Image 1 (cartoon, rainbow, N blue to C red):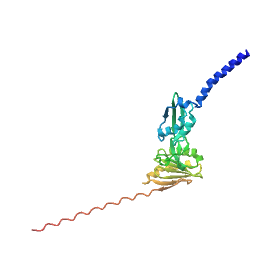
Image 2 (image 1 turned 90 degrees about the horizontal axis):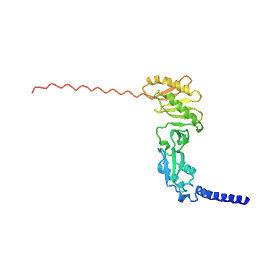
Image 3 (image 1 turned 180 degrees about the horizontal axis):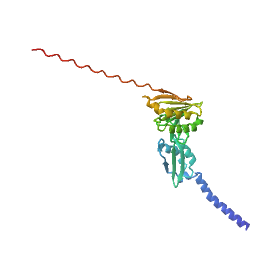
Image 4 (image 1 turned 60 degrees about the horizontal axis):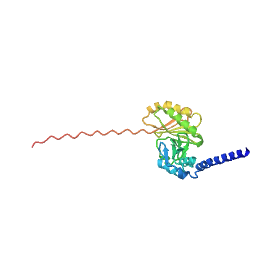
Length: 257
């Protein structure tokens, strides 16, 4: 009985070994590269700044390992090193395809040091970032990025309907806020908890101020306790009146022949 049991256990052990060794061999790529190569790389993305060929070139070095031995995390890291790439997902699809999904960064605003703020609130840097148009410029200490983003959104809401639009928000190292408008004007808000109240006070009066001035304002200092100081653009000189031409001289009467 005991000898038969030992024989059965030995047979099971040999059978399991024969099954396990090929599986281990496949998973470690011992012969996967030549028998199960990756023949197709399918790329899924909504390309705006990254190109298909860039992704293929970044992934190419990992695909040579074969379908089973392919290191998916390593492939994802290689593609994620490309500029503008935020996140990469990769998966195998039987029998010979690798599917790579690329998510690009979505720029929301410019930030200090030539960097960009993504729509997820992250900071990233790409070549040619300074040339991107149509994005607001925000600046301040990195650790206060979330506070600056929230203040920018609040200022946008406060300016709605005022015919003013914010293009820049600056927070200095000592905590002073300054707004730049899209027309080049500047609003100096200062420091402290009163900056929102100061801005609201200015906006409440601004329509009457704008109606009484022909030109636009250059800057407004809102740091006063009971008011603000506004610097206006110099009024354009009135066009000079055109001289009225003198009437032509009267013709002399014709003499007798």
